[in-house]
Amino acid sequence: MMRRDRGLPLRLLATIDLEGNAPYSVSGVDPDNTGEKVPAGSVYRVVVIDPIGRESSAAETVLA
Image (cartoon, rainbow, N blue to C red; front, side, top):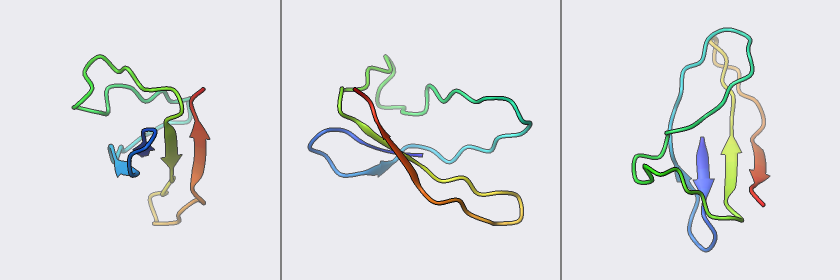
């Protein structure tokens, strides 16, 4: 998962191994932001890679 805060470059926050088929919530992935206060306008980019190495297209979303 990558995040770009407003006015800053995109940076890698974490590589996370997930199992199962439930919805996932990602929190606590930024060790520099223990309060998890994410500025409005931050962009998240997620790429999913399955166990045999197939990669999804990058999905981006912006926090309002």
